[in-house]
Amino acid sequence: MEISLPRVAEMLHSASTIVLTAHVHPDGDSLGSMLALYQALQADGKKVHLLLDDVVPATYHFLPNWKKISKPVDNDRFTTDLLVILDASDIERIGKVQSAVKAPILNIDHHISNTRFADYTYIDSKVAATGEIILELLNLMKYKVTADIGTCLYTAIATDCGFFRYANTSASTLRYAADLVEAGAQPQSISEALEQRSLSNIVTLTKVLQTIEMHYEGKIATMTIFPDLLHDPDENTEGFINYARSIEGVEIAILFRAIDEQTVRISFRSHRADVSQVALAFGGGGHIRAAGCTVHDTLENAIAQVLPVAIGQIR
Ligand code: AMP
Ligand code: MN
Ligand code: MN
Image (tube, rainbow, N blue to C red; front, side, top):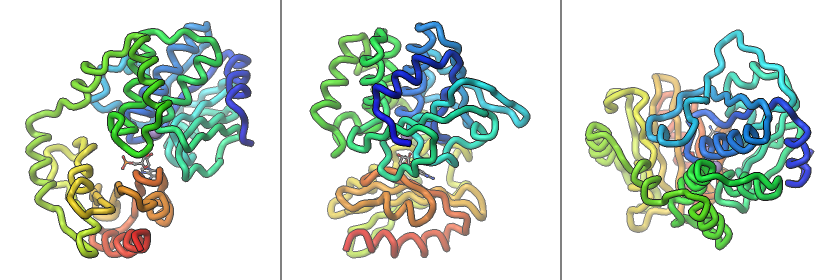
């Protein structure tokens, strides 16, 4: 059932125990939104548990309370009043949290590809980040936006809109960011924390840049990553795809990352073309200009299947 934001506020008000989660392969928006809502609900005296079926990447270790996020282990079973799923468009995206928690599900999200899987859904696909919705919600609930909450929500919003450069940046995105800076978020220290990479990660970037191939009269640029190209198999390649997207004449950039012989994670970025449709065709999802999916096939077959579908979105 789709519900209004005031109804979301009522549901949170009436719950005394809440589990918060978000999508695997966490990013600034999922982590920042989780941590901000956690802090606000805790301050209101609620018993809140942060569960995530993944590790928190080191890049985000500057976020207050990130250590409170725990990974469910196999036999974990949580009974709670409400399971709140943030920034995830599909139940599969929360991994093992799905089986670990028995509770009514409230989903707060901004993905155009949202499958309406939850018992209660609030989606606004016009906002740049789930963090924008969380800020509006906290204001509606009359919760104080502390400096720590400001840091989390500024991170959530800034990361999903490419630091106010992407097409999803609206006047209200900028107003929300201004409110968060007034609350105590520090744009410079947040962007410095997020920009920092290890030397070996920069070396990896130089190798990944060498895999760039141009297709369809230069309108599509691909990057391919084999596990042996990486310094560490879990290495963070976030942001690499933007180099492919920034090439003059490129409409769609695609990054193929082989996880093993039969698993390829794929990221899409575009200037205008709707890549959420390409990702959806392969069981994934996302936004018009940023989407992703996982294909269970060899790297070669994944490329052969995905490229024609991407070309179809340009025509
Ligand atoms: P990424 O390329 O991983 O940064 O993802 C870009 C966008 O697509 C994000 O909004 C993700 O939430 C979404 N996305 C990535 N992979 C998937 C997937 N397997 N299923 C659904 N959405 C995805
Ligand atoms: Mn996200
Ligand atoms: Mn998001």
